[in-house]
Amino acid sequence: MPETALPQPTVRQRNWAPWIGLLLAVAAMLSNAGFFLGLPGPKLIAWLGVVLVIAAIVCAVIGVMRAFRQPQVYRGKVSSSILGALSLLICGLVAVASISSRALPSSAAAPQVGQKVPDFTLTDTSGNKVSLGQLLGKADASALPHSATAGSIASGANSNIAATPPKAVLLVFYRGYW
Amino acid sequence: MRPVAISVDTPEVSRNLAGKSGYTFPILSDPQAETIRRYNLLHKGGGPERSDIARPAEFLVDTSGTVRWTNFTEDIRIRAKADEMLAAARGLK
Image (tube, rainbow over all chains, first blue to last red):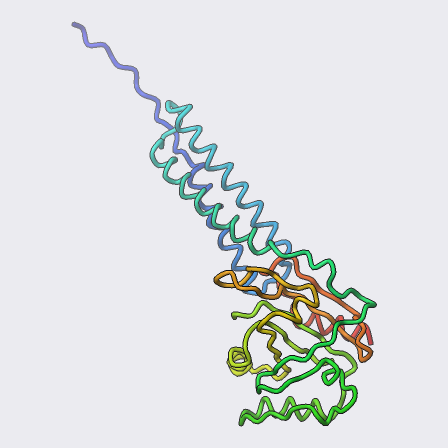
């Protein structure tokens, strides 16, 4: 039998899309660091994260589709599958973090500009009861608690409270559990 | 303008926070979230182990008890920075 020259197999292309997809997914995860670093434009950072996640998923899908539908052109059935799964996992985590960070109650009935705030009496770090009225410097500012603790920071703050009533109070409600 | 921080943290926890961060303003405790509820800021199950906490919000209140500025964050990762709050306070004087 004469030896038939086998046609030279075309060298298949490197399948870059799955790698790019993984890179984008990692970038999306790192973009969350932008919030904690206090970088300017946090809303932009949030949208950047969304864009990166979408781009990552698109690249991962393209990579897998190329490997499986055009195997004669693109390599990497196994690698694209693994990288694709990894990218989807990372994107999933980023998406969950983003969604839960924004899942806040509407607070539509909260005090709005022009309305009076509800009064309250709450306990401060020294265990003393403090009312909104006292904080606003009204009636009996001298009754304000002076810190019994040794910390100079706390006593410094309380001596300021008794001396000059503020023009305004900024109520900062926070989540706690820091 | 005097900042006052309020959360469900107990005074002990808040004391640690104040000590570590060097905060000099009053930090008040609302462990049953009663005041938080009255301000319509309750985030049911929003805390660790599904505990009830406040959603983040700021109110600038004048001496008559009237709100002059509010900030309700839509994203807990995005915090109003101190300089933004102070600018709002100065702008209203």
